[in-house]
Image 1 (cartoon, rainbow, N blue to C red):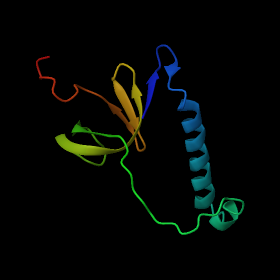
Image 2 (image 1 turned 90 degrees about the vertical axis):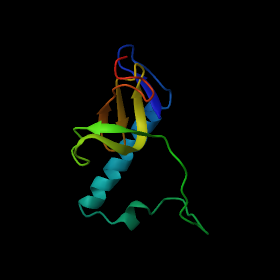
Image 3 (image 1 turned 120 degrees about the horizontal axis):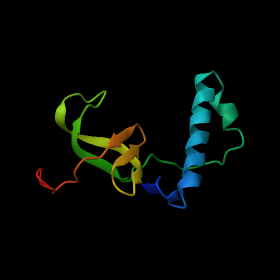
Image 4 (image 1 turned 30 degrees about the vertical axis):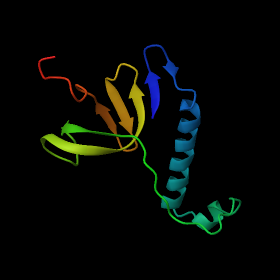
Length: 112
């Protein structure tokens, strides 16, 4: 998760690195979609030997969703994909898959 404040332009120093990394990932995926041979794309890549698939926890959001294009319904409890950006004022967030407008955080009463 990276903090970002569009009002002041202030952001986590890792923002640029993460943006470049995601642009490169998207470009590689586009090349594969357009028929490039992944083995050729990986020709100069490092070798990983004795490897396993592992998992680790990453930040994500959970809450009551309304207006989601796939997880339809109002007030539906969901968990998002990996959390990438959060506005400094907590008005929006960007996950790997989409933007979210953020309402009240958990624990804040409806009349607050």
